[in-house]
Image (tube, rainbow, N blue to C red; front, top):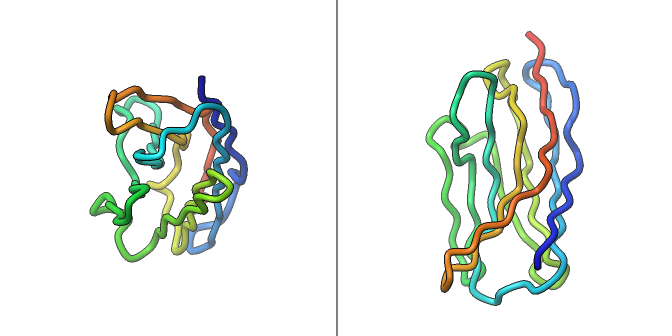
Length: 117
């Protein structure tokens, strides 16, 4: 089993910054993707950013240039640095780990990010 624990959400004014962290524990697969998704009320969950264990990242168009995903494989931790935040970034942010071989998905409990105008 894999457990994901997120931290770092909160309330911030538009234009501000926040950093989310997600630490994975348990049976971590060497070939994996760790990423962040978000879900605003009434909307579907959407990919924000992803980081591949063998290198490479992927971002939603709406956050390119403002958000940066990074990971520390030694500590099985992924980070999301969010800058120039906008009210439309308000959502519950979920950490995700996917085993590339089996496609098994694991999710964190979610952390609220609220951006005030």
